[in-house]
Image (cartoon, rainbow, N blue to C red; front, side, top):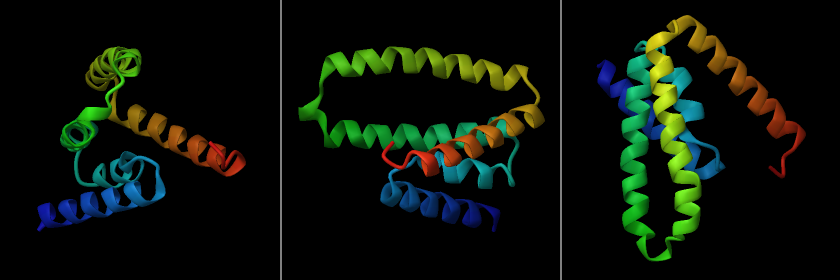
Length: 116
């Protein structure tokens, strides 16, 4: 039954993320972390984003701008690898608190600057 709830949460997070314009991770991580520890939660979210990005590559393959892809892609890959290393070297409680603070600051920023 747990997998059903998790699938439902992922579906709802994807719908909210697609309709509101902010990432599904913002909705999904705080809820999935109730079921699984932080490393597994990040793994699940990463897998979902991987499939989403593969779909975007297939769908938008004719409109690629390689300068933008390389400018954001290479630093993004490096930052992702560093973040993955942090997950295994910092306690889950500290990571959860950092994530909570980041989400609160992000939401406050969006209320203050809605044009962002």
